[in-house]
Length: 228
Image (cartoon, rainbow, N blue to C red):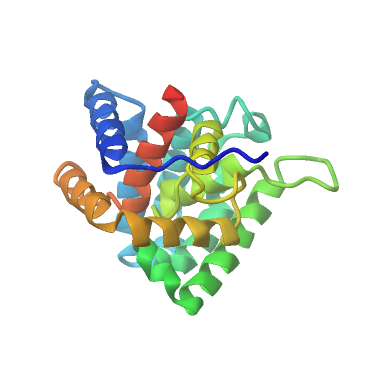
């Protein structure tokens, strides 16, 4: 018999959000590495063509992306540990071509054209990640692909172990990261939790203007999975 899905109530969301804020308040908390990374990409997306052609900008973005990924365990848990941060430079130039997706709200992805762009970008990230393995049949891990998308565009939660556990527990989406699962997650939080997550996003934007609902939801899902 399949397990009955639990309800993700406002009280549960409030409690997890409170815990996330406490983690972020710690001096030099690793949660801040996302803020540093997304802030650099925000500046670059203001003029993406100029940023993509400037070596210093691309190098700085690659460095921030590399450190952000390392601070969340991606160097340790993937083949990234075999490369220096400059491996991201060609991909950074590709990613700057998706400035139209930067900081889009989850509700925006109800638009088929936005989802088409998301799917295209998702494939580009997967292609970048595929170079970190010599296996011909290598599939980029959900966590690495989604961490990159969260850290650079801020539009999707990072599907690590904790987040996967939570989305399955509450019947939000499948436990894998794909355009289909992302669409399910966007629909769930738009239909069920739009007001509360929008308020929380506005609160976090006072601390860092680049917070999105996806990032706030990422923190909530991560806390809930960690505490489960």
